[in-house]
Image (tube, rainbow, N blue to C red; front, side, top):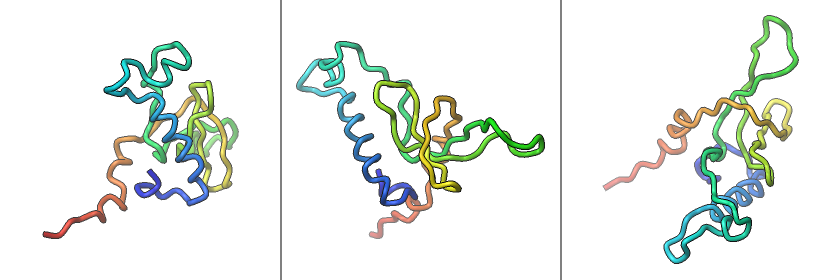
Length: 121
């Protein structure tokens, strides 16, 4: 996950934790249930999943009338037992939790690093 994003190396812990969460909710051929279903007894929901490191716009609560109403942040993790998200603010270098965000998952798949992966014959 880290190789396809522009995230700093200090976010490796967030990437590992997100990867572990995805493995726990992934279906398996050998077991009829996911590890999450076995542990919690609830069916797994996938509707809240987002692409790790993807940009997202979040509405700011403060600002001038003529300022932009939202800012661009990066998704980095899921808090435990909630349907919220951890975001990174590169301008202030802070991590915060928010629930409402407009994710830009589609444009994220055309990252510049991905374009550099050309295979020669």
